[in-house]
Image (cartoon, rainbow, N blue to C red; front, top):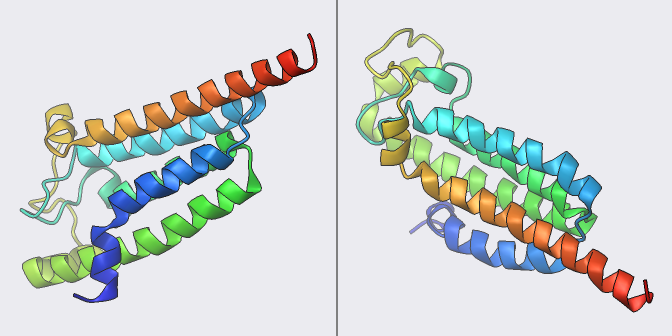
Length: 182
């Protein structure tokens, strides 16, 4: 199996490893959380919108955010990562998140595009050229479709990440106040 496919396949387990390291190294504050959380939630909102249009492995989707982005789920994940990097309040964490996203999202896109070209051929090429119009993959947003694409897992993930950063910020602030005798 080529390295690109291995990285694409292992991106979720790698994400848990990176997530643990990120949480350990994070230095969140109320200010960084207030700045980063809305960005992370905007990324997740883009993911929900995309997942509500996507009919995975059955067609070339061309509606919703797929009109503007070839890979809106990955764009949303990247925006979410940016928000979490801001919320974490650490340059080291931001660099780790950036490295993880560049390596894994690039691999996932290459692997996915190879699959789409093999599976859909000219339909996918037409979509990529921007000539898809209101193709068979065009539909209205459906929350049921987003659930069928398991987007609730990503919602839970970003919620858990933000909650853990909030807890860490709260604990760190409390720890330093107690240590200072206040």
